[in-house]
Image 1 (cartoon, rainbow, N blue to C red):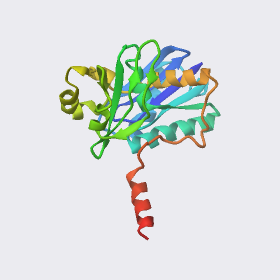
Image 2 (cartoon, helix red, strand yellow):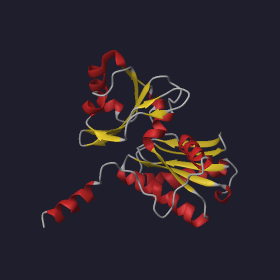
Image 3 (cartoon, rainbow, N blue to C red):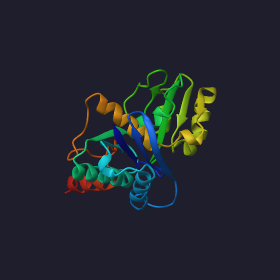
Image 4 (cartoon, one colour):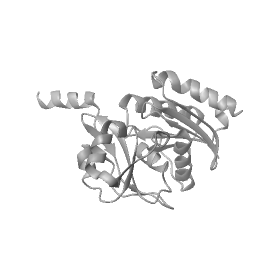
Length: 231
């Protein structure tokens, strides 16, 4: 089964193509350009270099968030369009799961952190090992609140680490392990692989109803609700 995985939840856009559990191609780019400008050329290039036509793909997987509101809309919207036009299955995977998978076999707690702005982060805590197990809900909270629940040595990764590195180290000291930068972004191939695992378990999503997983409401939606509440 050939699956295309797409992630546009952070500044680093990534796509990957797998066949069953083997990686055929992967493309990641961290440049100052919108995902709307980067995504389609990246998909086209990866398909050409893999000698594949988009019609030959069996399914699509997309990171649904949390992450950048605009980036998520672009990624999810693009993949939904492909699946609708080609009548292929679509599978959504959570961005934090994708990040944690980068360190799946580390026998420690793993804590991906994405900058949610407003002095908050998106996060969850996982236990690595033979099987990756999520130990908390998906969270949007102050970094201090996340750290207050950590009592064991924990690996931190993600785009929020650089911003909060000093806070993490000061609070946890020797219990804090900061992953190297290459582990700190979502890989398109991992998105595809997690999508493959869901499909192998008989799961898929509906391309009409699948939406970004924001955790926190977009600011525009908050403003509208506030205006309605205030008459």
